[in-house]
Image (cartoon, rainbow, N blue to C red):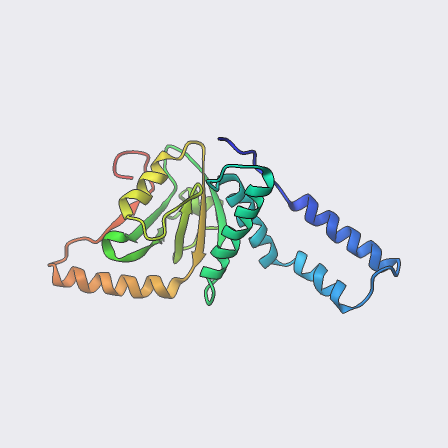
Length: 207
């Protein structure tokens, strides 16, 4: 079932305007109101909103809007809880073009590791659009989780994207560096054979 996208930016803006008006009129006062406004305007809150909106549209649940909203809230909290000690999750949206997405991924279940963005191709789509970074862990593709999934499955999800691909990622570059060092040792032991790294810069079979 197709679910319409939601955009909560206007609701948040109205809440901030109302709090500001009530504070100005003296109906609300104190540091707590100022702190709440700061939270609603913070980059972290906007990141939570982005992820919530993405999950709401893609979460696999049947039922009323309230049921979907509750499931979305739980999934959003879980995504941020899992990133404790790391950067918070972000949603990056890229258009589907004949030239591909312009980034490489590596890792996956075959390598007993998360899937990471290992390279942003200069002047490619991801480079031009911005938002995606080398060292980003790929958490989901168009609402489908790739955590604990295979490299091949992640690539297939990217290939199956129609007009836009929405990625949920988390920036943990140190983990990627450790993983690359481990893969380099494996390459050395195996006589230099390549590890799983796939270029998403082409719409063809090699993508």
